[in-house]
Image 1 (cartoon, rainbow, N blue to C red):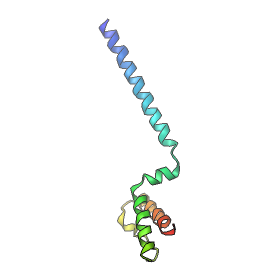
Image 2 (cartoon, helix red, strand yellow):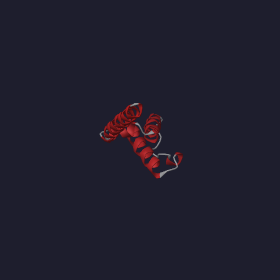
Image 3 (cartoon, rainbow, N blue to C red):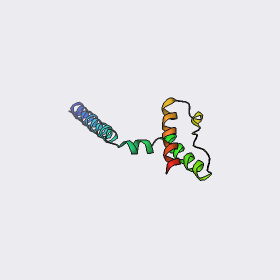
Length: 86
């Protein structure tokens, strides 16, 4: 009897965990592009430095060498342009 109860509880926990993981994945897929970019560190850094460059009246030249991957460099450049043009 104890073995059956143990198996039933294990299946219940596994099912609950699977539902929670699936709900989290659906929530992440539903995020807008703006929310995804706001969570990106390279993008936020670009926005910040773009605003600083604009306030210092520097030419718009994003220093993309700060980031090592192409994805991060593209995110940084997009953030820099947005921050500079705001």
